Length: 322
Image (cartoon, rainbow, N blue to C red; front, side, top):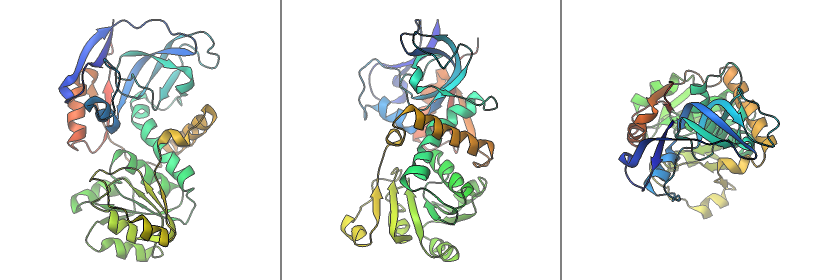
């Protein structure tokens, strides 16, 4: 028998039920994976709450890493014993699961499962922004709001690793240390005038703003964007901003909003993006990352903590090991 967390009806975290199941043999084009770590992402709370409806009962979660223990027919490039991860394939909250081989990403030998499960979804989201939305070049001025969060921390540190001058407004003085611990060089407190001072030291205006915060910092962030620059709307942790599209169009600003999947349309691109991500990780681009782990049985607690903004770290579920 294999442990699983199943959702029977949408609602609070307590609706996640820890159970046992029997996982069958993989079908055509599938793998069976004995999972070692499962990523917890904010989108999981949307599936659980019903904001993103699912046919129920369901196993939520889209990110994980582990070892292949069975291979179905017509799978040629992956073998039993291979270590793989994936970034968005529903059904992750389980000790053992079936996975389409097309979604499996081979892992480097020196990347542990816990780190991989904390890195893939957020890192590939960052890749889409840095390589597709705005191809960051050395000397670019990049502004990232929400840089102490899961995606924001990878996005900001990776942009800096690519040679950009990265400005990171944070919500309070208490957040400055968290951002600086990642190795970020231009950390300012939003709403204090520090942003304008920092922008002056790097050329005056940003080439691109990656916005994960929304309403609370939006107006100040947009004021720091140069005419003709790119405004990428990734998230809205503080609520949706009020966007004056006419005024922004008058400044020649390009507004973008996209999903990670749009930037990874095929397996070739997925593997290329993953290779870029693993290279950046190997080179130490992401600084000192924190990962907070929970037993799979405590998935509800992980959701509580995520929704209350408790962990200043990536959250990962660990299946039973026996």
